[in-house]
Length: 419
Image (tube, rainbow, N blue to C red; front, side, top):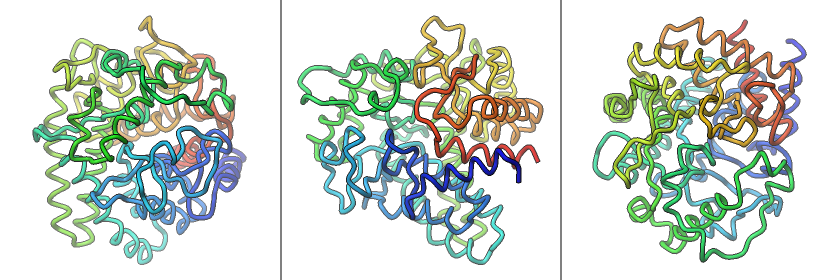
C-alpha cells in the first residue's frame, strides 16, 4: 500500500465516530447522507464490515414515509448551523427534514461486488435492499407528482451543490425577509469568500422555516416550495442507484424490488432526454415552477454521465469536459461562463466525489481514455494539495475544510482504478 493510501486511511479513521463518520472535524460534526454512502466505498478497502455499518447507521434513521434525511444529528454539537433545534423534525434521533442525492443503491452494489466475505455481505445487503427501495419509491411518489419520470429538489441543499449557479434564477423566488436571526458557523471554520453568501443563507433558512411550518409533511412540501428544480445530476444518481438496486435485488431473489427499480431507471433515462442541450453538449436543469430549462452549464449536467444514458450522450459529455480544459478533474461550473468563481464552493471549484462519479460513468460507457484522464488529474491534485473539501480547478489550491473524509475515500477508489 502506498503513502497516499495510508494517508487516506488515517483520515477515514480520524473522522470515524464508531458507527458513522463525520465529513471533517469542526465544520461538519454530524452524519451526512451522501457523504456516508461514498465514505463506505473508501472504508471497504481496509474494513469491509465497517463499510456496511456506515450505511446501516444512515438507513436506521430513515423516516416512516421512506425518506432518508440529509443530516443525522447523533450527538449534540453547536459547531454547525442549522442544528436540530432549527429543523425540529421530531424524530427519535434528531435529523434534518430534507434529503440528498440517493447514492446508496450504487454504494450497496459496489460493496457487494467487491466483498471478500460474500456470505456476510449477502446477509447485510438483503436487509438493506427494502430500505433503499422504499427511499426510491418515496422520491417518485413525492417529488414526481405528475409521473414524469424525473424528480425535483425543493431546497438547494438537497442537491449537494448548495450554491450552484444553476439555482440563481429559481432561488430568487425565495424570500429573504421574515426569518429568525441566526449566526452562521461555517464561516468560522472556512474562508467566507469560499462559502455561500449571506443572501443565499437567508433563502436557505426561509425554506427550512417554511417547511417546518408545514410540519415536514412530505405530501405537501413539493407543491408548497417556490424552489422546485429538476437537476440532471441528482436524477442521474437516483437512476444509477435504481438500476444498481435492481441488479442486486435480482441476484438476491427480491424480484418485486428488482422490477420496480428497473422500471424507475428505464423511465428516468428516457425522461432525461428532455433535459439535453445539443448546443451545450450536456444536460441542463429544469425549473418546474417556471416551466423552462435553466441556461447554466454546471457539473450537474455532466454528472448525468453517471447514469446509463445513451453512449452518444456520454461521448458528447466527455468532449465537453475536455473542451473546458480544467487542470484538475472537472470544474463545478463552465470556466468560460462569466459567473464562474474558482474558489466559491459549487460555483467553480473541483470536487473529488464528482470527479469519481463522472469518471465511473464514462468508464462504464466505454470511454476509458476520458475516465483515465479524470483519475490521473484527481490523484495529481491530492499529491499537490492534500485532502481538502474542494479545490481551485486551475491552480489546485485547497479550499473549504481540511482532512476531508469523502475526499480520502475517493482517493482509495481512484487508486484501485489506477492499479
